Structure formats: C-alpha cells, structure tokens
Length: 317
Length: 284
Image (cartoon, rainbow over all chains, first blue to last red; front, side, top):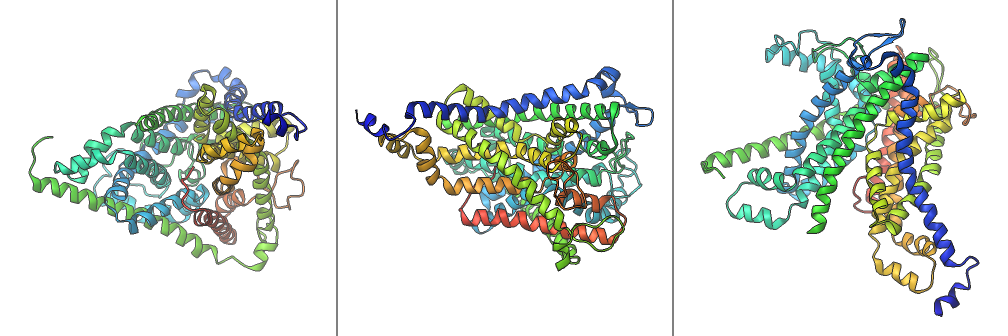
C-alpha cells in the first residue's frame, strides 16, 4: 500500500520505467557483442576479393608487388611472430622477478613509487615510444648494442644475427615492444602474487624456503593460470602494436632471418600502405587485418579464460 | 623438494633478488630516459606562436600546432560523447541487472576481449564503415573509432565501481519507493562518483594518445578543423607521426618533439591527477 502511495508521484509507473531502463542498459551492453560480430563480418566482407583471387596462397606467399597486384602475407605474419616472440621472451621473465621483488621483498617506500612509475609507463602513448625509438634508440642500437652482440659476444657468425648494423629491424622493435608490454604483464603478475594466500607462503617460509623457492614452488603453482593470463595479455598487446613498430621495423617486404635486418609486421604493413591502396591492394590489406583480428581474438580468448578461472578460484575461497 | 646445500639456495635467492633490482632499475631508467628526451627535445620549438598558429605545409619554416590541438580536443570530446554514456549504461546493466546472469557473464567476457583488440583493427573497421562508404575521411570517423576503443573500458570500470557500492544503499533507496533507475542515478552514482570520474578520465587519457586508428579515419590536415564531419581533421598524434617520419626538415622534427611533449604532458598530468585526487585506483 505504501509503495503505491509514493509511486503516485511519478508520471510513469516505476514498474514500467524500470523495465524500459533495464532494456536500454541491456542494449548498451549488447553493443559489445554487436561490435565484435561486426568486426568480423566487415573485415571478411572487404577481404573477399583478395580471398577469392589469392586463396590460401595469400598466407604462404612472400611475393609483394603493388605494381603487378600480387600480394602475399607471409613476411608480415613472420615479422609479427618474430617481434612478438622477442618482446614476450624478454618481458615475461623480467616482469616475473620484478613482480616478485615488488610484492615479496621491496619495502613500501620502494614498492609504491615503483608500481606508480610502472603504471605511468603503461600510460605513455605508443607514438612517443615510436619517436624515441626512431631518433634515440635506433642510433643507440646501431652504435652500441648491435656491435656489442655481434663483435664482443661473437654472435655474428650465427645466421640469425649478422654484421650489418643500421639499428633498425626485428631486434630493436622487439626490445621496444618488450618495454611497452612489461608494465601490463607486471601489473597482472603483481596481482597474482598478492592473491596467493598468506598462510601458504608463510608455511613455506616457516619450513625454511627462500623467497625465490616460495615464488617458484608456491606462487607459480597456485597462480599458474593467472601468470599465463598475464603472458597472453602482453602477447595481445604486442601483436597489434602499430606506431612504435612502424617507425623502427624498417618496413621491408623481404623475408629475412636476421634479427638485425629490416622487415615488417601486419600492423606496420597496414599503416604504411593504406594511404595509396585501392582495389585488390586494399582488399589484401583488409585480409591482413582479418588475420591480425583472428590472431588477437584467439590470444584474448585464451588469456581471458585463464584469468577468469583464477578469479573464480579466488572467489570461492 | 630436493636436498641442496643451504649456501647454494641462499646464493640463488640473492642473485635473483639482485637481478630483479637490476631489471626494475633498468626499466625505470629507460622510462626516465624517454621522458628526459621528450622534455629535452620538446622545449626547443616551444613558443607562443607554436600554440596559436596552425600547422604549415611542407617546407614552410613557421607554423604551430594550434589546429591539431583543437582537432584532437574535438575528436576526443566526440569520442567521449559517443563512448561514455553507452559505456556507463552498459556498466549499469552488468552491475545492477546482469551481475549473475549468463548473458552478463558473456558480455563481461566479450568486453575484456574487446579491450585487448589492437587499435589499428578498430581503425580499419571504422574506415570500412564510415570512410569507404561516405568517400571521405572525417574527424567524426576518428571520434567513432576512439569511442569504440573507449567503450569497453568505460563499461568495465563502471561495473567495477558500481559493484563496490554496498547493497544496503540500494535497498534503502528501494525501500523509499524509488524506481531503480532513479536510485541508480541519484544514490548509487553519487556514492561511486570518484571512481566513475577517474575511470572516464583515464579512458579519455588513453584514447587521446592513440594514433593508429586516426590514420585510417581522421587523417590530418593543415587547416583548422572547420569541416569536422566531412573532411580530414588535424590532430596531434598523426601530425607527430607525419612530421617525424615523412619529413627531412629538422624544423619539422623539432615541432614533432614539441607536439610529443605536449601530448605526453597532457596524458601524464591526467593520469597523475586522477590518482592523486581520487586515491588509489586500479588500472583498466
């Protein structure tokens, strides 16, 4: 009775307005799904001419000739895989021990400002990394790091290196990507370290384990899925990064196995060629985009599944 | 655990600790290096005309970036106008109506996946949707692209912030006979205000530094952004990219650095002030 008295004040009965409101919010939430489906539909639609013309050969062909209108995606795909692998291989171990240090052994006067700085590092736009890379880091690689790796460490005889130093190329791009994804991976790993129940860690410490042993034996096992989720998050970020890579990769469509040589990635090819593309060239670029979309979609799904399972495990506790 | 000498185990632990300190230092030092370079090279070309003159065509020595600043502001505001209300409404659904439903879980999952989508794909998508069909690049297409990037971020932060509001508040509002929509906007939003503002500002900061999606949508121009809906629109990030890569002139590189300094300062100030003003907030 009472609620009836109060609800009289409203022009539209609350039951009705609430139902309308709920539908409106549900539609807004549904936009996420609609967008995701639209991404695939749109990109498949626009890459149809290229798919029809080149078929499966598109993925395995290294030919890239805008004059003859023949396109192959292999250099871009391989370049993406190489730079991403370098970035993840460097960033993941460093993030792991950095997160371990920050959570387990750093005093608050170090932990708080460093975590803060890492969060800010994650906020710096990728174009800044690109510019810094192009004007500062590329010359630095050329003058110091590449000669050091090749001469001092005598790696130049290996086919994956070489003795031509121009600073550009896969290795430089991979290093900058590593720096860019490190704060993201480290943030998730910090959370995983914090989520491990204190009792577990304390009993291991009580049994005489060192903090490295606790991290490897307890945290790694307890939060393995979270750690993998963190890796996939970083992977997803590295795979589609455009501006930082575009300036540094060297933009060459020739497939090369040397880490010192220039190459390209899917994102860099897209950004580099889009302005002058039309017809089948444009369609090929859309197909490249579709490949990138499929790659990051799979990475994200696997990563989110793992992260979700961890938080569910935490929720049950 | 295998039996190993205590000395060895302690050494391993010590070495790992040293390594971790070393790498943390390196990372922070690299970040310091980037900021140092951006500031050092950026202040050179800073002048009063830099902020009030529009960008000059190739080879012309003078010129500023005023049109690009205005363009970036317009594009980002446009993105906020499209992305923020939709994101907040979706977040309300997840937190207030769909927190336990399957549909809600599915949306939440999809939003997380969307947050990890490369921004260049979003650019490509909007190009196909708005630029290819209308036959012209435009500022509004840039806004739409940034809004798509922003939307899942705002949605998830809104949900997180709203679900931190204690249930007793919702119950008291309902007990007073308020419709739910009113209780959400007048009671729950008020108590989650700080978190919501932080989330929106951080999302804005994040998209304002995006370049790749704008390459495909807003492009850039040397004019003032007077035809926001029909023509390429000047913006800071693509201008930086153009000046840095496609130009042999040192003056243009210097201007690119100054523009880079400007965008970095804006983004870092937004980030730092959000964290200082509204306390500790987890990143998105």
